Picture 1 (cartoon, one colour):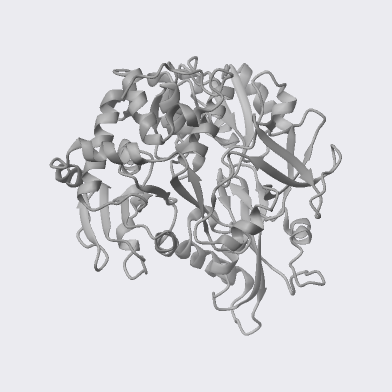
Picture 2 (tube, rainbow, N blue to C red):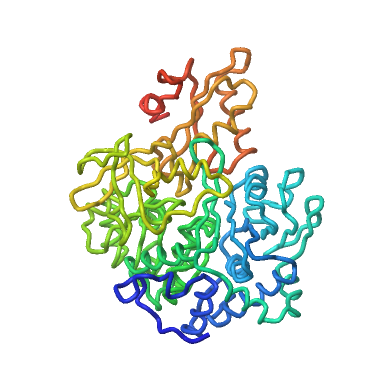
Length: 548
């Protein structure tokens, strides 16, 4: 492959990052050739240069071809941030696969739903993360077309019935007889418009939907994001945001490959580990939810760590106090602090710029990124005057290709004129800055994780004694928001409210990821509804928005 000079990502000289690389596998090749022996990944004692990473990705791809992976096959990853995740995902893409990510907080039934509905043939996972046995959780579940489970870390004795079990090392070893030219031919045959990944998201129906995105869409939007943020070759990028989310995978891993920044994957947020990494690895890029920065600022020993390397911060997903932005600039000495707004269906929509005031950064999510249109519209789709609240709609290249296997939902989300209806309510000021004021879909964000009430309600409704239920997000000082289940009791239940509430919480902990589990359970005689029968969640938030 001919070496391509490093572009200024997303700049006037390179407005189309998707045309520079074309596909993600070509980006990996390019990064290996252009950044060579520079460090690409640091994970504990493991250090890989860009050229070593490209080589190991190719080895993995040959292994996946050997095990029968065909172009277009879905490959699922259910594992925390680690170097093995990176090699597996990039190797699957190089072999022509489509990456499907699973939240590491999922329980067995939640993971099985995505495996079944994505048609994944291969699952990469680990043993022992947070004390969990992911493989055992899948026993007895309908896993659809799944054929192989590949362990990235750890061993298990018994896979689900009918599923082959192996390790990543064995898969790679099995690919040694596959000629490199065979994989190279697959890469050469890939088109920019081919689907690269599916990230599942939930909506008001309560059923997760697979958001399909092409190589070109990912490359272009990530290039734009990296340019606005100012990511550089000398940056040390601590990725605490999980790879199973577009924030960690696309604006983390992919952006680092483009800029030549070093990726330091961190499996979970632990403020002590983060401070240690900043001090010892000279971390310069540290995105995350507001709670991450608040934890650092309030840490009693932060003065004992050298934090002078910090340079770039990108936050969002919750209200950002002006005082926090000021403290990040003045106490933590970040050169750039920006907020952004996006969703799985379009990755990034709006961003603040580094020159914006603390007030703009705190009170808005910035303005549209280049070549993307954003409007505030009423229920009929008519654009509203600046300052009026309405639904945020988006049009442009970052929009998903659609929901996998669900044309009807795709048509309901993206209208005939190409506008994606986000379901979020906001306002736009005279400079085009967007402020999120409400959520049509009632989603709430707990500690940086999106929680969808309809999905939680559907999982709790079968619990004996629940006659009706509605879940809302309520403010929480530490987590931003937490769930509150408002329950109508079945009169035949004998237990008192406190006992019944604890039983509901225990049931929830068994059935769903922790970030979905309601922190509070409140009881009501009847849920408020409009004439059409829809629950009036605004009234519930007014009543139960500050539970004791």
